[in-house]
Amino acid sequence: MKYVRIIIRILLGLVFVFSGFVKGIDPMGSAIKFTEYFGIFHMSWLESAAIVLSIALSTAEFLIGVALIIGLRMKVTAWAALLFMSFFTVLTLYSAIANPVTDCGCFGDALVITNWQTFYKNIILISLAIFIFYFRNKFIPYSKPETEWILVGMFALLGCGISIYCYHHLPIMDFRPYNIGTHIPSKMTIPEGAQTDQYFTRLLYEKNGVVKEFTIDNYPSTDSTWTFKDSKSELIKKGYTPPIHGFSITTKNNEDITQKVLSDTSYSFIFISEKVEKIKPELWSVIQKYHHFAISNNQKFYILTSSLPDVTDMIKKTYQIEFDFHYADQTTLKTIIRSNPGLMVLKDGVILGLWHFNDFPQPDYFKGNILSKILTQYNKSIEWKRIGLLFMGFMTVMVVLFLKRKS
Image (cartoon, rainbow, N blue to C red; front, side, top):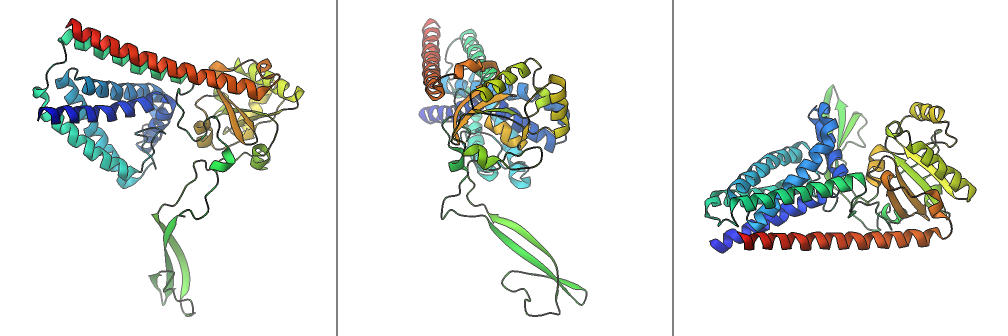
């Protein structure tokens, strides 16, 4: 039983660490999911706290997971894991039955599963949590209490720090469909032979004041004494959904220019803003510099928003803006980039670069060989992120071993 307890403790801990990490590197994604649930439960007054709750949730999951793996404060950790899983098992059961959202976001964008799959997963996890809780007094302490609390505090700061960094920049690992290198048209295409949505349709016909339901196979197509009243369709099997769907760009006059933008062979500087009224005033001068740069270098410039035309007209007048606004779906814009505004550089439908507003390069950066500069910067960024993660992992192991030896 000793080894069974160790295996189950580590297994549950790994799931918690993975879930907390993928949420932590994309705190805005979790905040968006919080906002959806607040709307469902009529708790819109909590929306302003969504990002704080997002960081708190990912940090708590990450911390519980690390504590389970190492064996820190197991009595407290067992309680935390059980309470955590009890709450989310009930919540996911509700989500599976009522289906208020198609994805609960339990693993962020790294692993998207259905609501029922999430509930079944939680049944397994809560079983493991109950097992650990039942044997919580059997686990041997990792070290002295004060040493264990030092480690708990260290890992809490680590998890919280990663989330805060990714909030002020972009996710250090991008699992969204609009990541760098994506050819958007390819991810919008449904493969040949892919399963389509299957519906069961009921046809309502009336005869002599009596309404009766029929199916496609037995409705009275040749009997004129029946009068068609209505039809009802129910989705019985979900078909293939392309990774990118709902991507559409329109002008103020409702002209669809999506294909024009995606097929453009020149470089397009596209600013993404879910709500332009929330853009910091000082950023408008930066955006206008990009507009002047793009025009003077025969490149394209767009700014996409879901704000109403009345709002964009007000913004144009307030900041004396020369360019026009284009419009896209709010959910799509929030999915493309976790920044308001964010910059996307596009060419031939391929996403070459994404920048948070805290990391906007000067427009002159894009003079000369734009593609070479973007690829060089991207490769360096990936290298530094990998080095940073490896260094943090190494230092964490060293600290854990040091404190264990000193205890």
